[in-house]
Image (cartoon, rainbow, N blue to C red; front, side):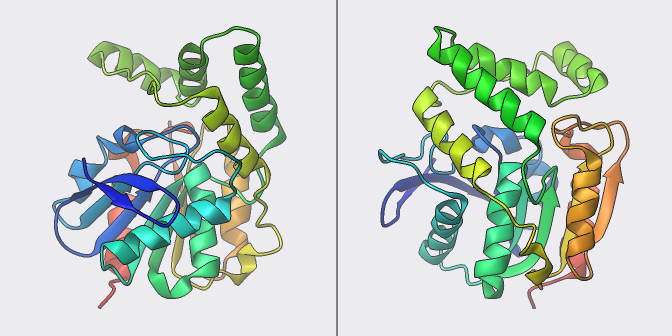
Length: 261
């Protein structure tokens, strides 16, 4: 996988397919592998760019905290390096925070916006759970196994059962350290678009799993209601982490409606 030298970090990324570019930005602790089932569903139509955000996977993480705006600027800089002036932006969970910042700070770079399993302000229960996870690691627990618990909570019972049957469970990457995890937690805890989402002016679709217990569906509905012209797609039988095949159609449909031209 290639790495691109940005101003502060070397970013790990992949590009697959041809066509209009779409950037996939994952959530807290996630890396490129999160999208392994989504990429084949999109790359026959689009140029799909996946990346490890600062603090995740194989991307460098300098000492010191960062915020969502910094993660946004990293993505914009990667697009500059790839000579991509405008792209469709999809963000899942924390990645949806980054995607919102891109639409607010760099609307000229965003052809369309897809916000998946995300929010304007992080749910209190989610913050409590993440902080408890971090505390358990400080007390001697193994971050990888604690992170696996979080991954399981992000799925519905049906999704988890199917994953077990396939034997496709993927544990958290070893590169995710407690320090990196806490940097990302601080970034999402500091994000708040409740007074700003109404300023998003790019074509937007909000997608949410009906059975999401990490970020309740009403938070996705509230986000869509704040953005002029945004639509809301509720996916039946899905939780916070949705099987790609269950919502890829909604991504493709939205992107095709808003070509870069």
